[in-house]
Amino acid sequence: MSEPFIRTARTADETALAELDRAAWSPLHSVQRRPEPPYEPFFDARHPPEDYLVAELDGRVAGYLRLARPTPLVCNSHVRQIQGLAVADAARGRGLARALLRAAGAESRRQGARRLTLRVLGHNAPARKLYESEGFVVEGVLPGEFFLDGEYVDDVLMGRSLTE
Image (cartoon, rainbow, N blue to C red; front, side, top):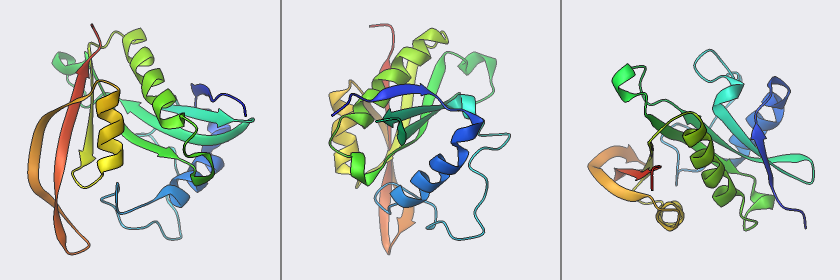
């Protein structure tokens, strides 16, 4: 088995990333409805390729992480936010999500960021456990922020310092 290779997305990745994103959709982590045709473009003006880190296994796209500024405010420019993370089912258990999180930290530092944040649904225990193991801590909870599949679900705000 090969190690995951992490790189910045390229325009040519659009089809593979869009297919991965649709296949990885789950009510465990998404507040959006299941994607249905006609599909929106994966990349657009708000979501350019340079905002994505791609994990490759054996030369194939197997995961991605979207890393972006949470706001356009200059006073918030020291923060980067993870705004999406997906791993192909066939690649689960191979350390891709962890490798993507670590690459996001390194890329955030390279960009001059001092903090890395994310939001995760309260019922997504596997993701929360992974984030905690990578140094993220709960910084806030928005109770019952989403109504999903007939239940109110918390929005958990997590973050970590990049200066440690």
